[in-house]
Length: 249
Image (cartoon, rainbow, N blue to C red; front, side, top):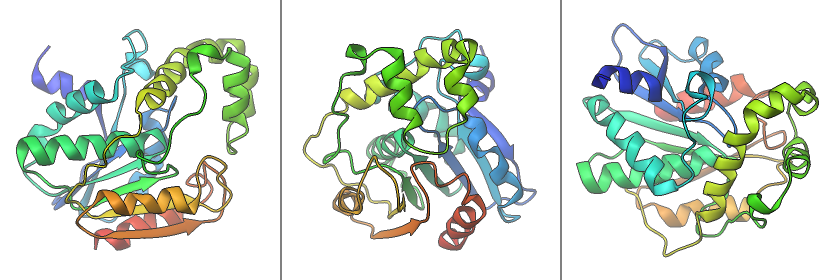
């Protein structure tokens, strides 16, 4: 497989501007896929490319084993991003994706001396103060899907359809296992400024745990809230993209 083919498996390009001066790379939530960010393509301004990470174990990578170790996933994504470091990049990670984007930022800064323009973290407390309470390998499918359904904006068909559940459970378990193992540690600071977004009714994190992201950067920190639950960025899509665009300048 060529380098371009490998990049094509890991990164989905939803928008390529004619004269791009910045790339926005998005990281999906646990059990999610790159397509959740596809609608953003029509909302960004003319100078921004839009890409989203496709984790193994979903979409056309369904038969690939999921990566359930955060350091391994961050290393692989960082390697794929190297050819894209010829211009400014911003990261947007939601839920699990916030931690993945943070870890990728650490790798790019330490190994390649590259600092993202902005690290947007959404719907997730800072990793050194947040942890999943239950090992997902000790919970059955019904329990895990019930917990996901309680987070908010989830298609009920997904929770009822045996075929769909069979498709998503391996990736969901793998992602939750990765989060469970991503244990609190000595905080490592990035140089990139961090902008944190939070749904006001999100049951998975609090303003306090999200504000703790400010302890993980030397580049400045901002916190903004949006009405909604854990998946606030679906109904508030236009407002979220407008806020991202404004922050990117």
